[in-house]
Image (cartoon, rainbow, N blue to C red; front, side):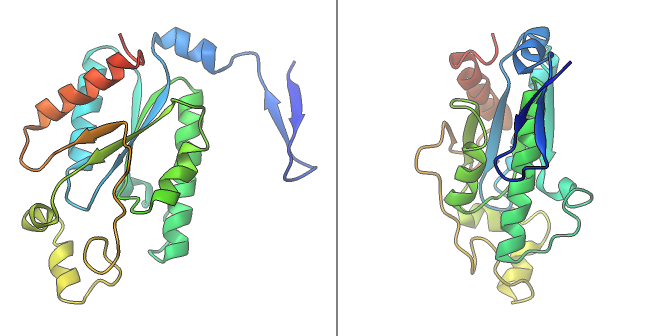
Length: 206
């Protein structure tokens, strides 16, 4: 049997609280659920570092899931464009999915430019205190442009892409990220070590 808590937004929708909860799922997995939110410019290395960290955590026996900016636009957010409103909705949806995955007891790694502080705050506020860890992949713009893995900076400089973050659209750097990775040309595995150390210090993993 489940108990029901009435929603404050719609009297016809209720939230069902089940017997198997987040604490139970986390105990099964011997870890503390959290959302690691990798933010930074396009080409900063967010997906690369998040992927390497997920691989390391999997080798250590932890349960994870990686949400990647491009991948979610193939399905969950395929109906969204790149207007300010659509970008905000993209982050909101990812936040809701990450929250559900954390409720499943997972360590969630999310790699998104998410250029505005209020968008990142929106996701942080969805989760219990201490469960959202902002990871700032701090790579200089000139290095991101040099890499330009998708050729997007070249198109932005040519005027073929409008409102491109870092060129003609602002990126608001985190002010107090839980994990600050001075990436640049740093070795990826060393950056992963820093993330693992931070998770261990917060007792998310042992």
